[in-house]
Image 1 (cartoon, chains in turn purple, red):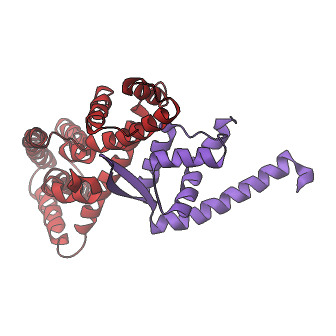
Image 2: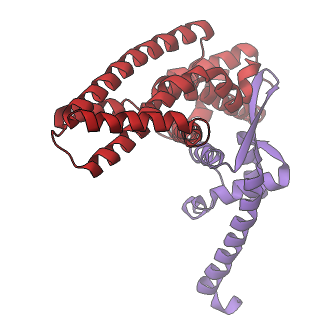
Image 3: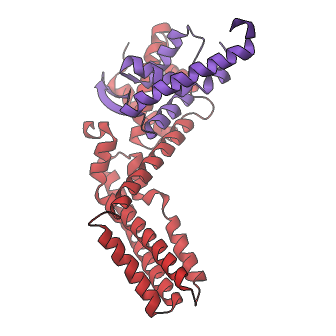
Length: 110
Length: 227
């Protein structure tokens, strides 16, 4: 398992990116998808995921839907119009960040 | 293996035992725990419900559900003040601006006719009494609603507690204690404006929002009509 601290600042971008690809997702599904995509390298903790989701919702980037699944209520998150725009800009920022890091960590590579 | 309805109810109880009071927050946590327990059972089918639940709960870390509750409270506090702000803005558009102008002029004329101390004391005592009575009524109403529905919603709590706006009380107490006797015209105008803003905010938080509680909860919580 990698250094979780390094991923921490990117959690919101990761959530936005997943929702961009999946229309709507619920909390547990997000943790599992990330685990699956990163082959267990990144493990989003419950104590970090929900605060990030609630913050994005409060900022108007996510909207919620609730459905009865099995015998319980499930809360789905999806991108709002603003959220879709924000995802594009956050992903661009992320790419820029990765490039910058690459120039520092591995200058020959660039 | 799927969880039974009875086990779901036990999970609700479990979240309550771990200081999650509000149904909206409980619901999200219950679904999360339920999904995780079902996942744990796939890997370790011999574990009991309680054992799997405890493994899942441990993943929330040493503070348990507190981080989630805190983040939710922050998010809904922001939502609450957004609701207040949206109504407040309307008091500066036609026709409600007439109400704002009337309050402003009444205070400004009051400053002109009586001593500043008298005006400030009258307004402060009036506001303090109104706030006390209204808060008392809202707390009674809150208890009644909870008794009927057996569910507390976080935003509902904010509305009944006027978003922590009890701080308004302190502000008017300070005015009673420190109200000056003689003031300049500029002070009168600025004070009239500030008092108008506070009176409007108090009116919005103690009267308008509580009267719209059903509509607000329906809009905020998609699950509100499902339970």
